[in-house]
Image (cartoon, rainbow, N blue to C red; front, top):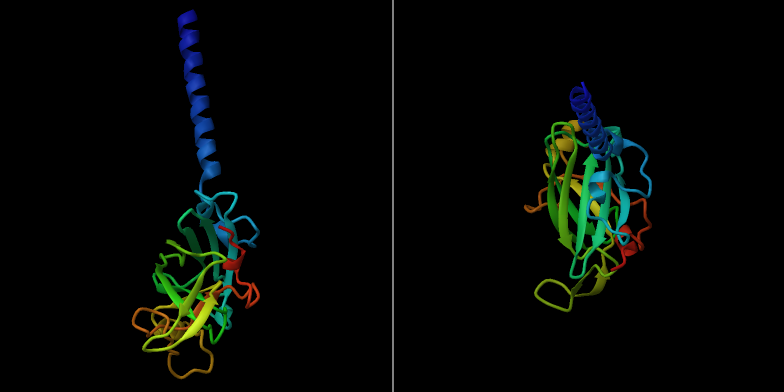
Length: 217
């Protein structure tokens, strides 16, 4: 009887430990639907992996006119500075499903955008969610310069904003994002310089102090 009681106790103990482990994993699981809630200073769980006390998290907001066709469009970013470069994680939600987008670092968030730098492609899944990780200089030191050359010359110019564009100009047109237009609007914001309109940006920060200016290395 004692052996049976001991065996039974061990079984209950193992079951209890299993339940604790499952609960712990559930607490750490990423729930994509939570990303659509009001953004706070704490980034979504998936973005905070490998983040440090030096990381800076912020939201991307719908570009002008986008809420008329994608009412839940939103983006979330965490930049973690490194010794040699920085890691930028981007998560988007509420966008068109199974669609290609293009991410740029820009001088200002809205038209005419200023000096802009192509960073990465981003693809959404069947639910309109997508993510990417990019390494580079994404902090208060981010800038471009042209001391001279065959095309143009300009002084060192900081780029502290982010913008995300539809890769295919026909997609936002068909979604009804371009009220009053009789044909798709074409912009140069992809590798072929034949992209659609902007869908997300960082106009929630002022023009001369975009979110990347808040990242300290």
